[in-house]
Length: 121
Figure 1 (spheres, one colour):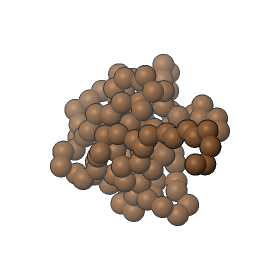
Figure 2 (figure 1 turned 30 degrees about the vertical axis):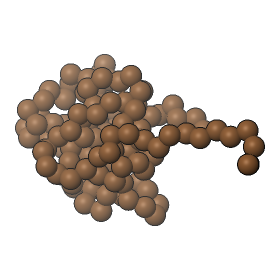
Figure 3 (figure 1 turned 180 degrees about the vertical axis):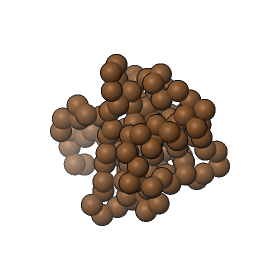
Figure 4 (figure 1 turned 30 degrees about the horizontal axis):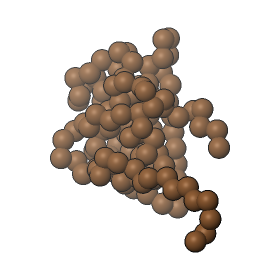
């Protein structure tokens, strides 16, 4: 499967906003959360991940040179395993944000290992 729209594993400055967000917010509303609530500059190249109250959608906001990129994923049946809102924000690696998008519980901060077998015995 081609995952060219995913964040790169070596992407620096990825932040997970733990509180649910009203998903009617566009990139402007999400950038305002980054700026006003987190005290970060949304134009500095960080990627910010948000979820809705039902935890079945993710929006990622990223400034790329001359405009915002908004990545949106909506699950058909399941929910994302979102960390508890102990703090407002959680820094992540590129690998961890992709694990989250794949459905892993990143509060464990590790994914499932891949298994390769030569035979069924």
